[in-house]
Image 1: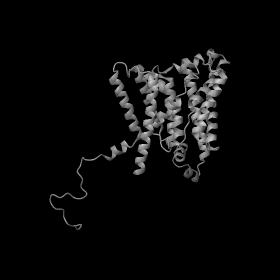
Image 2: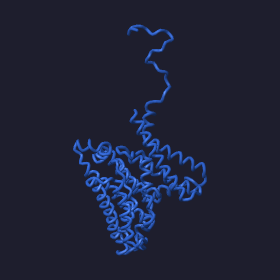
Image 3: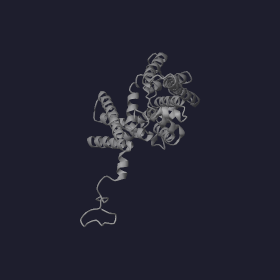
Image 4: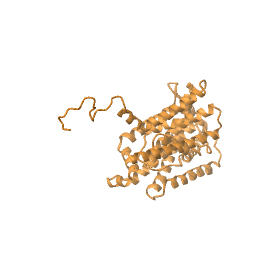
Length: 350
């Protein structure tokens, strides 16, 4: 048919498509956003537990408790997001938190204990942050320079940090480890009498490092190294130095988490952080980060952190034992990794 030949009556032009059919492009693009799926899972959990226990779940008290309980894990998960984006892993975050808390507590105990003033609080906070920073930096050096797999490095770091903490304390949580001022102001204090300071600190940390990841050169380098480290090196990125900095960052945030933990719980809880790494990695992967590297956002992690938190709170309200809560979180992690691999294969086929 020539270009000038009219189309016969009753025959649709080849380029004509029935309007209103098919998925709109904007909806397809929205469906490709990892955070949308993560938020959908969170919303389903909230709806389920609200329907199961309408009078007890999602009260104002529950919302505050969920946010407070998730605050420390959120800080740890922000650091873990960077590590996973560079195709690494850190199994030591819980133990580094414990070691940082113990060293901070030891200083407080010898400088006033529960009656210590703000000067002691400031120094003990610096000790906690520095401990995490140095420990994370050492692990990063082993990964980047010594070329030891991050799984091995951080698994060893998990045991070593916890062991040092137990040697220092004799395996017992020390008394007088936290200043009453810190607990009253940060642990139990609320901004405007409504928002717990722990939540404020966690969200401020999330905002800062979310912006760093999304809009700075450091963030771009993080994605580049995770996507293709050799290509990143060829364009002039010092991948080894960047890896050290990323692991130092997650150590620093573990130190911050230790200060928040001491402020809220008033003790080091030496035996209470064995599964922190599982909880944090679950949150990051649920948030859309790929364990193969190169993908992930702090926004996704923010949403992902609340999935285990809501799941645990909902199961507690329903009377489910703690052991089954751990099982549920483990199942969610495996499912998230499987979904990540499934979607990865789909993108490769496309």
